[in-house]
Structure formats: structure tokens, C-alpha cells
Length: 466
Image 1 (spheres, rainbow, N blue to C red):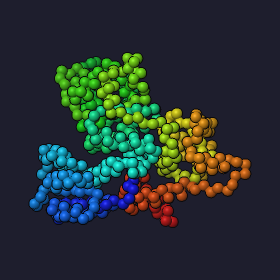
Image 2: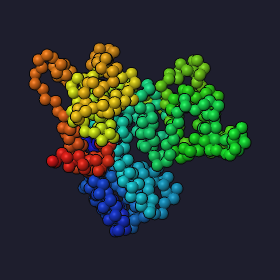
Image 3: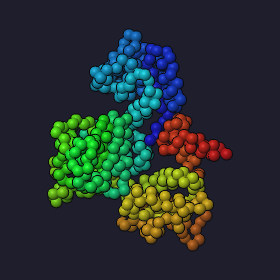
Image 4: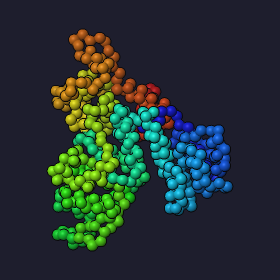
């Protein structure tokens, strides 16, 4: 995700000069501008005439404490992001800070990676709070600039802050697991395990043991005790993909685990507490499954309270264009190839195909085309046969914008006008420069937005200068 303009400074409040210098240097290396003060009183004075994007404050300060600074800023109506750091933290102190409106709470000794991550998360949350004025083209690796995807990103980020179960609905291939991972990364559990499991891939007779574990001797072959998926995800998120495939008898036990936050291993005599956030997904119509008595209504209503629907690719408008370039970049880099251009006919078919298999089908098509491409060009013959055969969506309405459609149609005329198509390298160069500008020249941030390693970004910038 990109910032629309260079960030305002970060204000660091720390009375230890060495730690203040360390924090400012680390944040500046990450591309931020910083202001440093040694007391809460100085911070308040500075904020009276200077605008900042975030406050990072120690709790123990001379005079007013960091908690008091937090309280005073919130009482004054400030919506600044605030991160509280302390070497003397307790659970009570953390709870107090969060109740007063702190966005994050970290402890010393300082984990510099954790501080950078916390700053990034808080700033991203602020941007998402005003998402209608922003252009969020990436959400934890999910590409989407269409309004329907912008709304999905916004809703997913908001629901991630809750600890309630979430149900993700969508056709096969739309990216339900990617969204589940994004929700986990946006949640307070982001540094704990994310455990995905496909309910359709586990034999029904083993499913209870897989989920809840078993004690030694619980059944033939249980030669030792084994902890289940709930325990593996302890403190984090358990992603139940294709939950519509779960046997109905196990659904009752899952519902109990959700309600009581306990599980009983197979053959066990006592309930064991678990702290797990459930994210479920399905391509099935669960209401129809309830009518056919294949799915429990009480479990459905427990999950459906917070549900998200991922739209199929055919409902995402010009997102497909951005996905095409992003996926070409991903697979050309993975295969060590340089794709410099796309033939107009190939590009036209990629944009206009119906994609019943959604993003997964598009990615498979791009991967094949990149693999077969020669001489740095992705051509029509490199596409799967089904894309070559069907060049328009079922409704007959092209997904490609009208102007682009006219240009592409013109390219196929017997005597087309001379048209210069920009190479992929040129488009890539422009895009990199645009992201660099949006991040204020911060190369670390730019690499994160582009989804590439920093060394890859540096190499491409060097190539562009040649």
C-alpha cells in the first residue's frame, strides 16, 4: 500500500539520550523523518505548533509520564497514532495504555524490527481509516484498485482488530487464504502462528484428532499423545478453508470450542483452554447446505456475523490489468526472465477472458505464458488454449476500458495506424518511479509496496539509470 504523500515527522519522546539517538537513527534508516524530545512537556509544546504523523513515547519520563501524555492528547481530541514503550511494563500498564487509546504497546529491551513493524502498522491503520481518500493498490500482497476491492480491504482491516470469528465467502480461486493471512497480519495476533487447514483434505475419521489432538491409547495406533491444530495455533489464528466440507458431528464440537474456548482431546477426560481466533472460508452456499442438513445453522450464524465476500475477477473491472502486470513481474523474476513487452493480441485476450477460475486461473495462465515466452516477449501463442478460444466475457461486455479496446481492435485491422506500445520495462520503470515519489524516496518502503526484495529494487534502479 502506498502513502499519498511523504509522511509527516515521527515524534520520539525518550529521556535516555542514547536510546533516543538509537530510535531516531533506526527510524531514519527506515525512511522516516523524526523529531526527538526528552520530556512529555517538551512534546506538548512542540505539538502546539508542529504537525506530526505519530508519537512514540517512553512511559517513565521526568515530570509527566508517557501515560499522562497519552491521556492528555486523547482528551484533547488528538487522533495521532501513539506507541507506548517501557522497560517497566506490566499487564495492567499495557491494558491501561490501550484503554486510553494507545495504538501499540512495546517493551524494552528494544526490538528494533518490532518497532519498525509497529510504526508501519499504525500508519497503515490511519490511512485505512480514511480509505476513501486513498489509493490502496496492495493489501498484504492482494492487488486491487477497484472500488469493490477497496471496500473489502477497508472492512477486512476493521474486522481484523476484533477477536471474533470471521467467515470469508467467495468462488474458488478468488484468494480466500490470502485474505485470511492479511486479516491475521492486520490483527493483534500478527506475531503468533497462522495455521491453515483444508477441511476437505482431512479424512473424516481422523478430523477430530487432527483438530483437537488425542491422548495416548485413545484409539488403535495412538501410541503417544498428540496435540491438535487448535494447540498449534495457540495465541494466533486457525484458518479453516472449505469449512462447508466439515462433517456435521465435528461442527458441534467446533461450535463448543468457539463458545467455551476449550477443547477436549480424543480420549481425554478434561477440557483444555485454547486461545485461537477462527477464520473460516468456503465457496459453498452455506444457507443451502443448512436446508439440506449438511451444515449446522447455529455454527453458521456464529460465523456469519462477521463475514466478508471476495468478488470474482469478472466483477473487479480494471483490476485485471494491474494483476496481469503484477503476475508477469512475479513469475518473470521467479524464472530469471526479462519480459520486455506483451503482444497486443495477447494483452487483449488476457483482459477480456471470463476467468471462471478467477485469480488462480489468471496466475496459472501468466505462469505458463512466461515459461513459454521467448526473446523477452509474451505472445498470443504462449497463452493457454482456452484463453485463445474465448476472447470476450460471457456477457459480451469487454473488461478492457473503451479507449484501450479501440486501440487493441485497431491493432488487429488489416491496415492499422502506427501504434507504439510501451514495453513492460518502460511501464515498470514508470511505476517504480511513481511509487518512489509517493513514498518520498524511501527505498525500503518502495520495495515493500512493490512486493520485491530491496536488492531487486536497487538492481532495477541501476538498470534504469544506464
